[in-house]
Length: 116
Figure 1 (cartoon, rainbow, N blue to C red):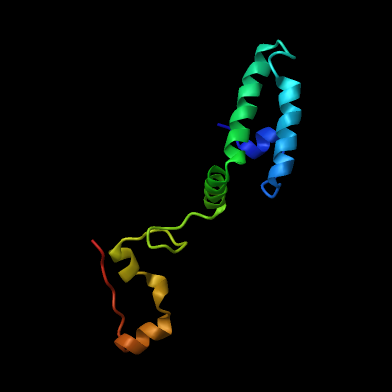
Figure 2 (figure 1 turned 90 degrees about the vertical axis):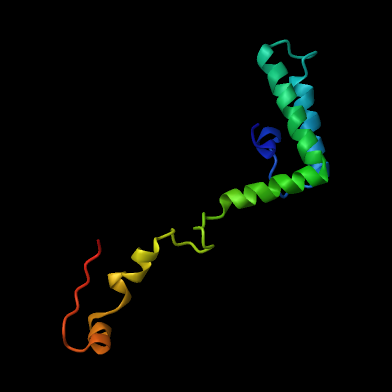
């Protein structure tokens, strides 16, 4: 199903009275009794579905919540915006410590760790 707001040509902030006006205007234009084309009958049904969805406050609220969720950036499994990494990748992240911090922790000797 297409976006009901797009089908009726209204925005998400439009009040129910304006939605009804847009619906009635489109119904008059695309009603099968007035326009015999096959496309108009399909468009008429699309307009009816959109109005049913937007005229019911519960369905409209659910639709708005889904559209807001789709617009938010995706988050990783931990809830942050960083993608998931394995424990080994997190533990041995070389950018984690600067060279000075590494020397302070391990002394002046150079420590190399091989990851298999």
